Length: 455
Ligand code: GLC
Image 1 (tube, rainbow, N blue to C red):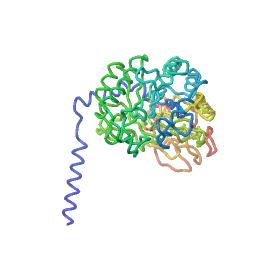
Image 2: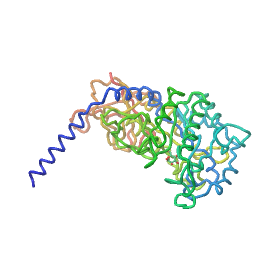
Image 3: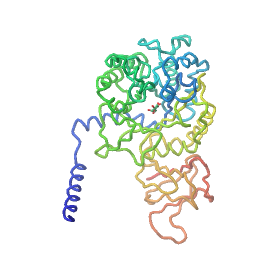
Image 4: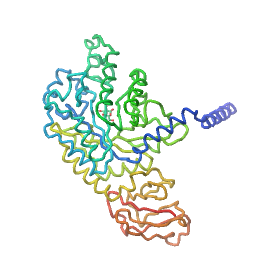
């Protein structure tokens, strides 16, 4: 018995090693390099704004209200009728995003409810039918581009309004047997969906990102005719980058997955992976955590569970310290205003980014191991020690080769900081204590960044 167990362990060990040694095919390597090249600007940008805007802002119970409350399209219509974003001012939104230090933005052109914010020719279920014929998506794109931000569109591949989209998954009419008996022409829906994506990628100038949402069991990949869809998008927009939600496991952190044709970056939602994401050959892969400022994506009147600017900055640093991006969401109110709390948070974050953005943009994981006081980010020879948590005494940038240190500065001011190598006679090697402040409180409660320049 014992021998059999040992034997089994040996077999497992050998198998694991064989798998680990598997080398990527040439095609895979080419695809990997292409993904890294296409996403380069985006990986350097690190911080973006997500905007969930639609008729669901009117009930103010989140963008899933139609599904959660199992509303029929007729019941939902009153919100569509009521939705009239008279205060919508794309320039104002763009300015807020820019001031917060964001480098790109992604807007919901169509969410699961199927109501389109863009002037599509394929349905009358669109905002531009009223709203003075204005195309909200076009105004968004123009204004954000004018501020120098990259632009992306979110497009829901599931549709709770289209008559040919069946009541599967979390459809509001799931379990409604009369609805189930209807005839659904799936090919017709695919034609509509592909057609809308064609409109978006052909008629709106250069798009930097297409953000699809989402696949689920039985509805992923070729069910959406994803290969054809992606081919069409890349023909219309050769430099565009795509999220991974046309694929199986969309949104799920599928660490060690293979990079595929259908998506360029992973999309963990409302959480940050433990470690930098890698493909099955241990190459770092692009990823982005999307995050709400309160608990839901669309506007909510009740949800006041706002994250603090401190938590948001810590989360951004956490992402960047693992080679990831952060896409922070705003759900504007039905009139088109950002909630006041969002503006306050964005302004605070922006102030910090203004002084410390250098430790975020173009940075990624450091070669140093993280310490109790916070996290490191790194860009070439510059290591950024982010002091996030209270500690006693000075922070120790342990693991740094002190002989190779050129300069240690407070990033926010550029002022030199004193360093020393031992404390209380402790002679252990590898320490680099940085004198920042005598108090265990950080000088900047959000995140104090120490820049360590190496020779
Ligand atoms: C989820 C939700 C959706 C939200 C998205 C953002 O898939 O269905 O409401 O838009 O996540 O990542």
